[in-house]
Length: 414
Image (cartoon, rainbow, N blue to C red; front, side, top):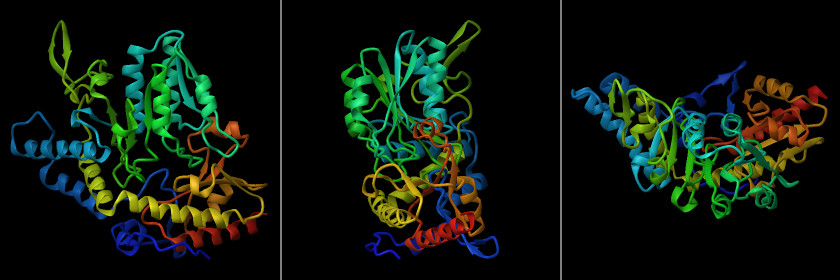
């Protein structure tokens, strides 16, 4: 079906690294996993690194003066350095470990936001933001008397830059936006948007959850103030994410949570904050998860993010071409050559949930629903959509299997 050029990846070798893919489900159907936008699978190297930590070197970090604690602390901080290098951050003390993208955004809203946003101020978002980049700002706005505004999209699914310009003003204190929409696949012009925000004195937060697993991330080139992403979308474990912030901003921001690890001194009269990054890492951190994240970063670096991006573009183009031929099909978002490695769609007269259920029975895993982006679906005047999202271990043959299975499903439902 597909005549795409040769992928730059050794897919057979890559797939051998992911044990979950080597199985059949539902009466011996080969598993086709196209739900990578929600969470990716784990290579053996990540599983082994976490297992080895639990088996041989686990202890709490930074507090013990015994061998296990020293080993665990070294591995934990090596993970921080790996993240720093992965995102080209100037210093590793700017890398804050959090429970995920959601926790990282809440940390910024609950610390920097509370300290710097007040009554009458504005927070600008885009209409295609994930709920994780909407609700924390709405909570903050309600608390301090600020307002949340939304920039719209063009008819072809691109961010409306004229709308952004019209809504950025001297009252805007934060412009928080996704580098890639998790529904439309829209890739935003991050550097340009940061410059537009800074021109009116606003700070920026980049939700890179759908970007960092697929394309190189350079926080210095972006010029952003905060960047956040999750481990579980980049072959790493759940329960770990990253908040990167400019050192000068973080040093002047009060901590979000209090407790052990984030203090310098505590007395009955009060406490003093610790230095970065400990100030924002109260309590026992996600130790083994950080070790797993480092293993995931090492794996992606070995494969090469540029090659991964090229491979995903081939899969996306092939899937887009075939899906566009289906009667009643509406593909949401930009053209195939202007989007990331995911495709969301609706089919006239057919419920998205029914499509997903019946595809699963044929071994194909996709997503159906609002994808934690209800405002976007309301804007598009649809209740839900189906989403197929691709990653480095997916193949053109799987795209063919998916399209064929979808055609069978639609033939049954219509």
